Image (cartoon, rainbow, N blue to C red; front, side):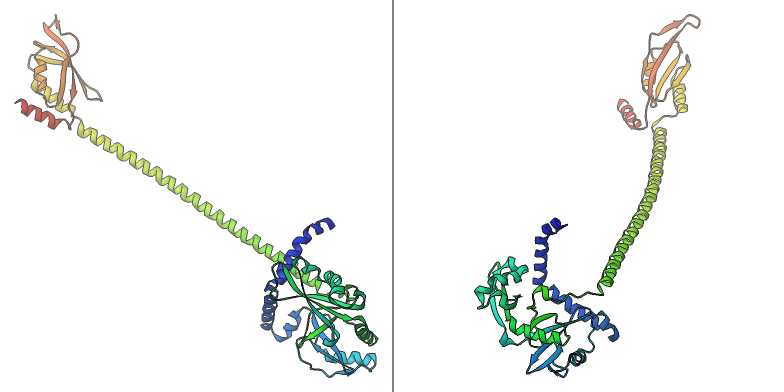
Length: 385
């Protein structure tokens, strides 16, 4: 754990410096105050949170107490009073402040404090107190064991790579005398600071080992609330993802249904196209082909009376087969050439004489004319005539 902490420390220090140097802390404080102002008055104190700093300063044998950022609104009391009386006077001056949030700061007079402005490297921002210890002998006429001190970063222009800081030091004799008096009165101090107007400067001259540790009773509640907020955030994210998944599943189901409907429509369209194509094909075949009855009628009209057919065939390709007997088979070619229904009449094989009938047995092959070829045939016939 220690090695991991040491490894992450530079990154954490960099993030801390960036946060302190950004306007976000002031914005968050302003925003929180605006949100609290929207709450009922009795709730504002409960949600105010944070430390409430109250300032004590000694002047002409009297103690003055007020809240930081507010003018003096309570009567001072003499430092010669008994401890219970001084505690009662302090309690009356700080009435209305939650004891859990109360922090007391002893404000020193400006004439009893030494202040020096320093220019330090940027990397020294998170170790200002250690830098102050090194610079004490060089920047002040005091030794380190003679003063209480602190350093605070200053806002303002500084050379690139450097920061402006202020060293504040007060003699131990002055601070110890006042701390001893407050200790005898039963008043515990959380910080030794300076006053800047109605507010505290924001430093603590006490060394870390003299700073009182406060147990925050709201820490567990804040941690529980933070955990609950994180849990609610995770639940909201989980619910959002669940809703998105359900919406996606519903959309996928709709797409699948639409795909099925589209497939059905495609199949129906394909069947319709096939049916239309088949019907068109049949219609074209019917239009392009010649009726067998017409062919028979044409052959009956053209073939001489001394010729008869024994066999007549027409196949699917329009091929016509004629088999029969004739007194003179050779002139049949000339007879059929003038036909408008068949073309390409030729004998297949050898013409033979049938001894039983004394006629010539023949077999002819021809081709049916299509309807597209009819005009050409007519044109050719007209030209021949």
